[in-house]
Every structure is written in C-alpha cells, then in structure tokens.
Length: 531
Image (tube, rainbow, N blue to C red; front, top):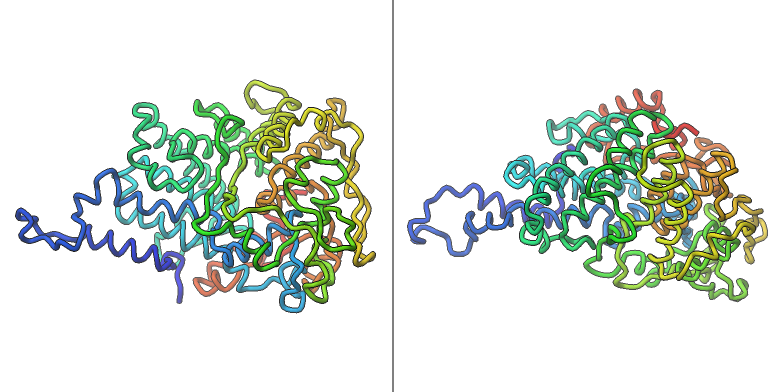
C-alpha cells in the first residue's frame, strides 16, 4: 500500500540517495588514503549549502509541473478550463471526461501526485536530514514552495495531509481551515528565516541560492519574501468571507512587512521550463488546447488590447478572421470541428507564470474594499494600477484610454459552427471605476480585471470564480456528472482519487465525513466558498 510520505520521483530519489550516502559515511579521511575518490566528500557537499540547495530546484519547478503531459493533466484539462481561460477541441474518451464533469481518475491523480511527490516529499527530506536547522534561509525557500504547492492542492480537493505530513505512515488530513492556518504559519516562518539573513547580509543569497534558483527572481531573497507576502495576501483574501478576522490579520501582516509585495518594480513569479513551455507543446504540437469562449467574449467586448497578445485570430474560415474561443463542455464529435479556433499565443521559451505582479494590486483593492489597511492608496488607485501593470506585463502599451472606458461591456458569444452554443453577454460590467457603485458591483469589476490579468493561470481563476462568482462564466452544455452537479451548476472541487484512497481510504473517509457530511461530491463547496 502506498503511503503519503513515500512517493518520490526517480530523479529526486537518486539525488537523495547520493546525499544520504555522503552523510552516512563515517570513515576518516586520513590524508586521502581512506577516501573513495569517486565520491564527493561530505565536507565539500556542505560548502555553500550544496547538500541542501540541490533539493530546491525540483521543489520550485514543480509548484506547477513543467513536463508537458503532466501539466496537461495537473492543470490544463481541469482548472485552466474551469477558470474560463482555455478549452480543448479534443473529445477525449468520447467527450466523457473532466471537461464535461465526468472526472477521470488517472488525470485527477496528477493534481495531488505532483505536489506530494515533488514538493512535500522533498520538504520531508529537509526535516529528516535536519537541513531545516542547518540551513534556515534555504529552508525558508523550501517552506514557501511547500505552502504554495499544497495550497493549490487544497483549493482543488479540500482537506489534504499537510501539517502532520511524514509523521506516520497513515497521515490524518487537515481540514481546509486547519490547512490554511498551517500555510500562514509556514509562510511566516519562511519570511522570518529569509529576512534574518537579508537584513544583515543581503548578498548571502547570491552565494547560497542564486545558482539553483529556477524562478525569475534571480536568487534574490528579497523577491522571495515579497512573493511569500503576496501569497499570504492571496490566501487571506480567499478566506475573507468565512473567517474575516483571521483574513484581516494575515492580509495586514503581509502588506505591512518591510519587504512588501510583488509590484510593478519586481519580477513576476515564474519558472523557465527546462524544455518547451508545456502550453506551447499542448497547443502547437498536440493541438489539444484552444482559447476559451469567456476570454474572447469578455475581452472582445472590451476591445481589450491584451486579447491579441493572448491569442491569434482563428484559422477556421467560419470565424471570419476573428479571435474566437470554444465554449466549455459542449458536444464535440471530432477534434477537427474546433481545432482551428484561436490558439493561445505562446513561445517555446515562455516562462510558466506562477503569480504575476499585477495580482497584488487587485488583492489590495479588494482588501481595502473590505476595510483593511492596505497601505497608501485607494481602491480605485489599486484597481487602476493593477490594470496598467497587467498592460505592462503583456506589452499592451498605455492603459489610460482603457481605464477611462465607461461604456464597453462583454460581448455575446457566437459559435459559428453550432448556434446551439450561442449565449448572451455574461455581464454588463464596465471598465471605468465608479465610487458610487454598490460594493458587489465594485467587487465584480475588481475580480473581472484580476481574471483578465491572470491569464492563463487557471488554478487561481477557478478558485476566485468559486469564491466570488466572478467573472460570470458559461455553464457546460453537456453535463456527464450523473446528476452530482445540477444542470446549470459549476464544478466546485475534485473528488478524491486512487492516489488518496490507495494510501489510506480510512483517512479519506474521515476527511469526507468531517468536511463534506460523508459525501465525496464534486458539487460540495470548500470551507472558504460561501456563495
């Protein structure tokens, strides 16, 4: 039986075997006479923290898997589509799959297997080898990766093994609330550990960490602290409707930290894939993903300059040279029907964006809307700065005219291949800020622009849609959930797969009983989802 602490990738296992071999050697050097010259001495491994830093690249790059087929299963054929960004033209398994709410166990397994096998299990090695106390600053990076990867999994499934991960072979699951509290705690520990070094020796990261930092932060601890603060703010916003006091405390703590948040002056949190960007392969080599209908209808209605940066005009003659996406969950007889709809624009070397810097402004806009202290600024100024930062991130030019547009609204969706998929505009929300609007209308405006700016990172888009109901999205036309999700309803979570039940069905049953009333349904709301 598999256990939650034992699933380790082959490459990681090899690296750890080498480290443990070095660490367990008890022979004396004796001027080299008793030293195996084929092995790197333990003392050499410890120089600049090499024995620990070797564990970090895999953790950083597997917050979202950079491997094309794993990315497709972990994120693309689920969250990217549920968040309204993308859609597949391929009718996998006769069109009975995740897209039409018939969850495929082997696909969904990956959503847990990647963070468990490549992040949580690696974090466990830090603890077993006592690198957490030997290299506290490097361990801070490991903790950020751990919280980041696990929070994505918790937002996908609900309760997961986290706070007691690795303590036994039958790990109890944390409730979503307890998991979130543990995420905040780990992020605080990471921020403190990194700050302790950065405050005194700001160049230490260049020696110990730069060579293994696979993010766009260039090995700079200060940027990692900013990223951790921004993740704290994101998670605080997520629980704001269910645990307002805790949310406010964590949000204000993140904003007031002296290192601050990701912003227009910092890099975005991204990872350069070792080979091709997985979305490039899935789009261009495999033809398995195309633009989603909400992107083409919302951005098209706004005449948004970012739309042609996101996607190309459809090659299908029926599209008339327009940028048009595919509606989620429709009847697709064969791949050729929609394969020539708009492709997402991507390059082989395009980084995988884990968090863009514009998000921090939209988070602060919502936080201030809720009455929190988000630093100097107004809801409107944060909202508008978020839009301009997004324009900068996509090389879309000045956002001034766009921000001043008080008339444009999302457009209707027209499927030139099948009129049965046509739909009216999703919303009448405009772009220009209006302080006289109701709080709910202000929230819709913030979340809609946050959603546009976040393309194509579907995990966050889907989470925020479930939390707020914004932006409004099209329901599936073909619902193969067997009645678990009502007609016109939206999927709320992934159910537990064999990766969980093979490890411990008893713990899965206990978590489902406690959190979901004993029913492991894709329509059960997560703790933070109250709408």
